[in-house]
Image (cartoon, rainbow, N blue to C red; front, side):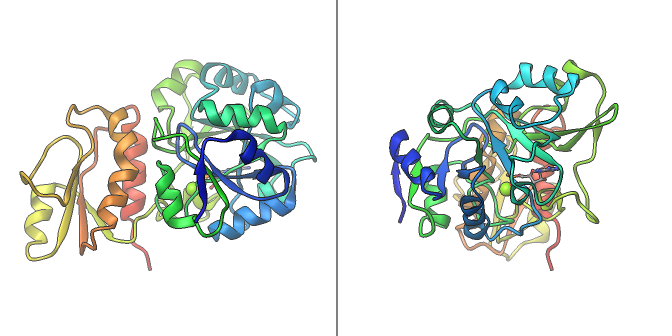
Length: 319
Ligand code: AMP
Ligand code: MG
């Protein structure tokens, strides 16, 4: 079992000796290690059983710290960083040699972000080096949004979980890359498409790929619970699955009164609230030993797009 606490200095002690710990962010909990230390980076990949070809996101305390580690900071990247950092936005920028190739899976770019969580920002200022941190879950599974989610899955492999409460955004960061004049969203996430376009104008979306993904985070069947999940019209799916032990994940409506195998993401129909509840609800349903989870998509605006992206991936067929 890992120790769970709020002690920044204790967290620093582990990080300073190449250990990995869990850290809270506004998106999901991360599995963090010293980004400049290949021993720590190797431990991250091992604990998560993450393939080495899936690059990590580096976390920094400020935009000026990021600038010390990248070769270029395009004007549009600067605009986005100024608007959304600290916050759920990751930028793919050309890296300097000081960032180990292990972090970036050999790419000459690095994914960078300033997370918006008071404890983790304080930790980042205390340690002085950036922290490489993928989501703190076994590779391919639903991301953790509570300290106990991390404890349940990685508690045996790490020593410390910095407990920052429930993740406020609850869904991973939006990832953006810059290709000559094109601005491309590689993953829909905590900053919505509409918000991004307000700052930099029209962008391309290249976030969902079955073949040749840039990285496994873009695989169609990533972010999946163990229980089979099907998406569609809930009442129709309920009829089709009659006799099965099914659970329901709905946006706003309670379909069967008093049934504990049912989670509503937001009674008020608020996509932000739905995002914050999504992974917790999926985990709870996954723990009920159901035959199948029946889910519906949410409205396709704001964070609704990112929710639908995760639900669609969770439902994608696995071999
Ligand atoms: P996470 O598991 O939430 O930390 O997500 C990390 C994801 O960031 C990876 O799966 C990639 O999709 C993306 N990523 C990280 N670094 C790069 C990079 N240099 N170029 C493109 N995508 C990247
Ligand atoms: Mg992940």
